[in-house]
Image (cartoon, one colour):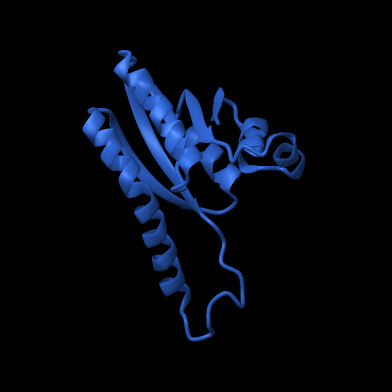
Length: 140
């Protein structure tokens, strides 16, 4: 079983990363997929003072689950074994941690397609490549 993390944020590049993984499954590669959505930190001033930390966390989890739902449906329709998980924290670190904790063989992630400019600015995909202990497939 080839275990992979697919980073999902609801964007077209993330959808293409999942489609790439599903093509492997269609070719007969036995896959187990962990879909990971990383919700961004909420900073003071972004929510009103009357909003509790528990409410903010619930809202972030719901946003992550909403971003993951279409990808989870695609996995199920393709008959690919997998599950979805919402994580919090710096995106690249959270994606790499998921791969390590779940003993995954690879990470698939989309790129925004900004080329060298994004790499110079430290895009999430570039940071995942830098931090990962397993092969990373960046899908454009």
